Length: 160
Image (cartoon, rainbow, N blue to C red; front, side):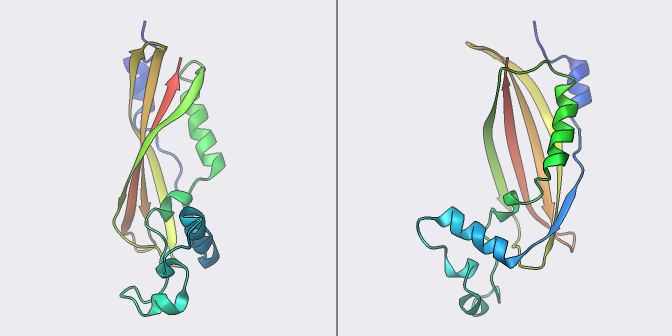
């Protein structure tokens, strides 16, 4: 018997998380670059002011997927997840089913980046281990000018 009914699906799909905005700090950008390129040094465009000034960007920029480190507002995530959890029985296990990223612009120190996340789909499959519910979310990242700098799509999997 399916866990996910049409009624529950209708209540979950379209759920929007509160948006989160934050100002980008140069030190955080540099630490992110160092962490994702470790053990090698990051490209100078991301950490060396003098080098970056001579590029077409005119200054340091964040690595392309930096926006994924932003807007995680723990309370925001917990609120919306609790909303979904009240509609579904407790899962035995939760997993990350993968992520996709589209990058449209660059992030610079001092930018204000806003994330807006929503549930775009949810569906159920039955496997050897039982029922699996897949939740697809999409987050749009915009800068202070209203320009979309990135979109990420994530799949969450609940095993029952």
